[in-house]
Image (cartoon, rainbow, N blue to C red; front, side, top):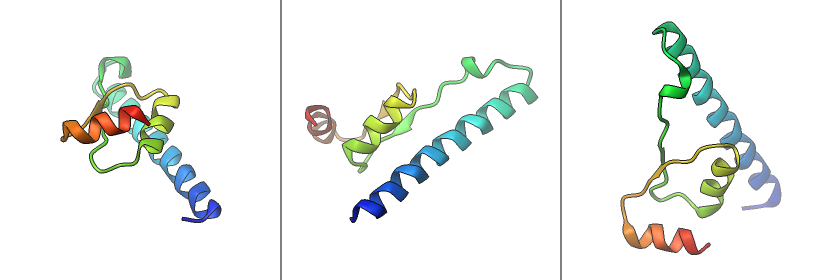
Length: 77
């Protein structure tokens, strides 16, 4: 992946996360609920550690991982 491709990938990840958060906010308001009451869990299966770190920096705190060994490897990164 070239630096330019990486920048686009990071930008797309940021945009997607923002859109999901907005959809949650809209749905919560429509249901007369607080968006803070809704838990977003990122599925990190087969995703590189840099994406998980990036989403964590943006506020996502819960991640789901299917494979313990993969989780341990990512945690070391």
